[in-house]
Image (cartoon, rainbow, N blue to C red; front, side, top):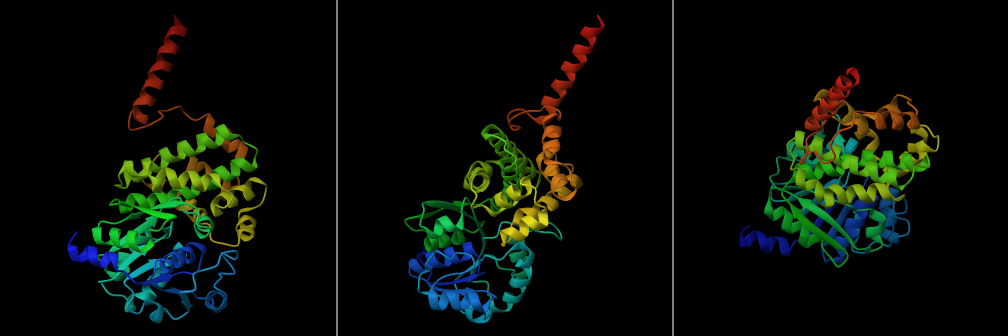
Length: 367
């Protein structure tokens, strides 16, 4: 990283936040507290009025007072005007449309960072890939980790990961958002960090469902650990670094999302476990739960590429095909037993050993 890049990173003072949800609002407030000029874009004029007049996001963070220097607007061009850092906190279904609308007001000297943990259905695209496709910007990063927005708003000690191939992007975001209660660690595995953030959502639904069905702590621990194995298996097949999943964006994010009723995906799973339909669970939540769409996408993608993901497949059958959750749990427990950590003992090697043992047992019975 050059001296000029370091100087720019330490003096970033104009930040734009696209999105009026809880996480984007929390990051906007942190940036303003750190001394930046912060403009936040959102579609809803009522939310804009609430932030500008009351310094409160009445819909998503009603109990949190936003730093008064944050100014909200529905005017995309004004929000992006001369911004040095752009944080894109838009749900995955609307992400490309918003970035495409913003593109005429962006330039390649800006740093663009996605905070969205989701996957676009067409082409199975991650949000950072959409940023690059729509803008051609070389300074693209991803922010992901165990980051419940309400706890960040309450200034609970929190850590996250900024991932980018570009060192200037990583350092700029660390300087812009780092504070006494929000710490950012760096990674150059943008793909792995982004996949971790998207994939863990589906397993939070499964753990929430298990909790509602009265399953114990052993069950939850098993689900989370096997979820981590599935996440790593899929990500490695897509070219990510498996070590990324040992960090905040992998196991860290998985733990918090699967353990807290503040997690939207956990709450959707819990509602389904209580007997609500998927539509009823989503309606009761009142916010976007990215994991619902990701379950379907992961089921289709893993089947297309022959990646073994029994938990994701089972959850898909429960959510979209009406299979009873307890029956699915029993079927998963009866699946062929395999290895624990595949990077020490491969699943294929464990399976061969199982078959060999079974054949030996049959021969012994014949004697």
